Image (cartoon, rainbow, N blue to C red):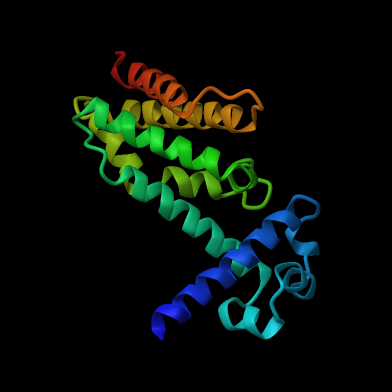
Length: 187
C-alpha cells in the first residue's frame, strides 16, 4: 500500500511541477494562484496544501530536486581523474538539456536570483575546484581563480542552455572543463 501512495505522491508532485513550469513561461510566480495552478495540474487544492504551503514552496522543492539530481550526477567524479570528471560533467549537461524548460527558468535567474549560488555551492563542485588548485599557496589568489572559473563557467553554461543550436553535452563539457583547467593551472 505504501508503494502505491509513494507513486501517487510522485505523480502529484510531477503534475504540480509541470503545471507550475508551464505557467511560469507566461507569468511571474507571484501572479500564479493556487487555484489556477491546481486547475492546470488537475488536482484539488486540499491535495496541494497537503504537500505545499504556497507556490513558492513548490518552486523551492522543484529547485531542490533539480540540484539534488545534479549533485547525484557529480557525486562519483574522482577529482584526480580527468576522464571521470568529464564523464560526470557531461551527465550534468545532458540532464540540463533533458530538462531544458526548467534549466532555463532556474539558470536564467528568472524566478530565483540565488539559484546560481546554490548550484555552485554544491560540495562536489568545491571539491573539484579545490583539487585543481591544491598546489596554490596564496589563499587570495586561489579565491580569485575559483571565482573567475566559476563565473566564467556559469556564463558559458547560460549561453549554451539558451542557444537553440547547442553543442552536444559532451562537447560543451570538454570546452568548459578545458577552460576552467587552464585558469586553475596557469600561474
